[in-house]
Length: 234
Image (cartoon, rainbow, N blue to C red):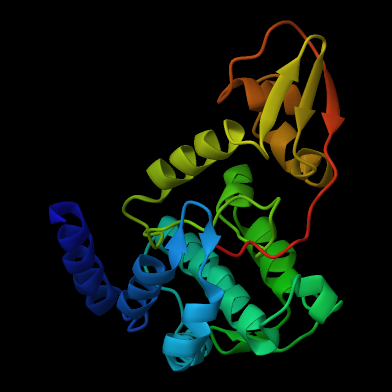
């Protein structure tokens, strides 16, 4: 309870200092509807759909300021907030792709005054502008195989600690990394974004990146698991 109160107060102060008026509202959404097992979309749509609208509207108008970490945290939070909005538009649904096959490519979100798609925000802006492979473990695509939506809004002050924690958490989850003898069963993310992980690896390999967060025996072959796009609903 004490930690939650301190987080709320800290985010309230940060939202004022950074000009991000939506950050406190976003944390309230995370507190109320995000669990270890997913997102309570039904309750979110019934009780706070207007809050999500208000958050995404503010994101569309407000521009990131401060350090590189502050800006990266802004864009990551923006992606996740817009993803929640994308789910609510079609909810109830079994999958974001089933309800809208172009959900990631459709240019219908606004961030910092610019209209773009979720793919453009992730690949054309976040991945292009910031040299940080661990963003793949905090960006949430509202799907079962995706790393879980962080339950605490990302902030520039604590961003790199949060990225480390979320990466380690996913590596040790059922959708992350599991070793079976000479084979390492890993998330499809490691194949899709291999170029990012190789750049962040001490030996220039995906396995090298993984070994920074997960104990691995020997030099196993990587087997990429099938990706489930089923909605990450609790």
